[in-house]
Length: 149
Image (tube, rainbow, N blue to C red; front, top):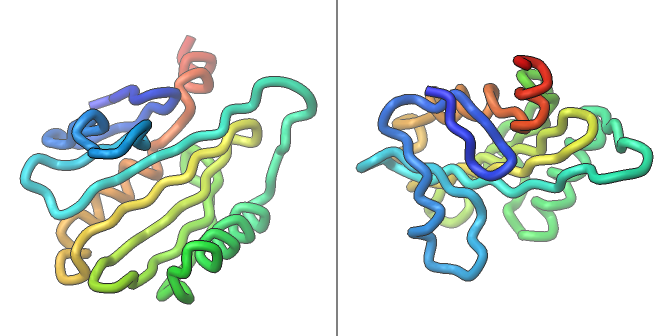
């Protein structure tokens, strides 16, 4: 099912819902979770407004991810990759304490999204396929509207 949350759109499997309002912090990031699921998938965005579009390369996104991992003390990634789905991305998987975390920096060439999925280390396989599919289908709603008129 196509779901819009904030400036983003994604193809989200049945059972996943927007739980942002349930996150107990001021101004929480966009948060999706499956009812009775293992973890939460969160998104933050930086939207292009004017000037020269940034037009990053995958190596730029990888550098952003490496800097974030150092800044937040996640440790070295267990796995990492770069690629292109609906947007180009760089991702890394980390063990943070007893948690499994996967983080992505994504861009459509103008806008940026940062996504994280966190669950208990022992449950990392439970939602992996669905989480990967959601993130790979991610696009900025304005881009989707332009492409699908």
